[in-house]
Every structure is written in C-alpha cells, then in structure tokens.
Amino acid sequence: MNYFQLFGLEAEFNIDLTKLSTLYQTLQKQVHPDRYAHGSNQEQMLAVKKSTLINDAYQTLKKPLERAQYLLALRGVEMPSEQASFGDVSFLMRQMELREMLDDVKQADDVDAAVQAAAEALDSEYQQLFNQVQVQLAENTPESNNLACENVRKLKFYQKLNIELDKLEEQLLAD
Image (cartoon, rainbow, N blue to C red; front, side, top):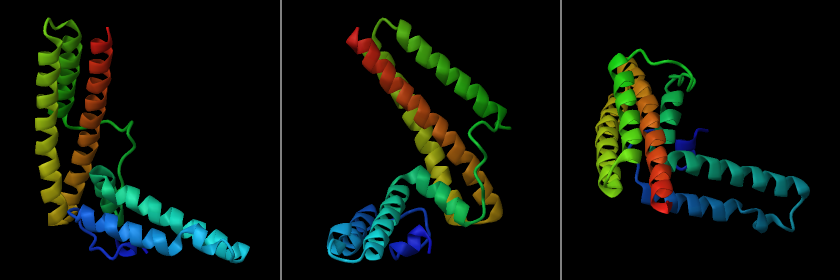
C-alpha cells in the first residue's frame, strides 16, 4: 500500500492538505500505541509500526517537493543523486548568478533592500518552476515525468538558496 492509498487519496500531486491533515489525525487516533497499552507485546509493536508508517506518509505527502519525488518514484522515475550534475547549462549559469547575488547582499549599503530583492528573485523563479512541475506531473507521460524530475531537482537548489539567504539575513541583522 502506498502513501496515497493509506490516506484514501488519488495518487496526484495536487491534494487537499486540510483533508490530508484530518485523515492523518483520524488514522493516528485509530492506531495510537496508547490504545494498545494493555495489549500483547505484538499488538503494541504493530501499533507503533503503523503509527510510524502513518507519520512518515503524512510528512512526505504534506511537503510539495517530497510529495513530487514520491509520486515520481511510484511512476518509476528515480531521482538522481544530489551530486549528479545538470545538463542544463543555462540553469547552472543562473545558479552562479544567484550565488553572486547572495554575495552582493553582504556588501550592500541597504541590507534590507538587498535581502528583499534577493528573496523576490528566488521566490519568483521558484514559483515558475513549481508551476511547471504541477503541469508536468498532471500530464503524467514518461517525458513529462522526466522533466518534472529535473525540475524538482532544480527546486531543491532554490530551497537551499532560500535557506542560505535566511541565514545570511540573520547574520547581517545580528551584526
């Protein structure tokens, strides 16, 4: 049983997160280990395993990039390792430009404005790629799934850059 089936959901990228949360709480109540406190060791162990499975499934499905990766895996598309290189030279060049932009934030006269500009650039580009992934996953063809796989990898770079920007902002504002 896959994670979507566990929650009674269609194996699609776009899911109702409120419904997912409600289903999660319902399932967790049914298998919570405390309900089996007076049961046999085997029943207690089974309850812990089921609870862990439900929690893992929920954590995966509630996060868009993890959900996309999981959906692609169900479709037989394996994500390359994070160390695998990209063939998209323009993307690599853009990543270099974005890293330079983050370095420029450190030297900016108006740190707040520089951080804001960097955040807007990262968010805009992330959202464009995210929208492409949604369309590609909805198409569900071998070609669109492979494109979605590459774009999910790219989105992970944007996530890392956003984390770096957040850390940089904290560091600069603390000084």
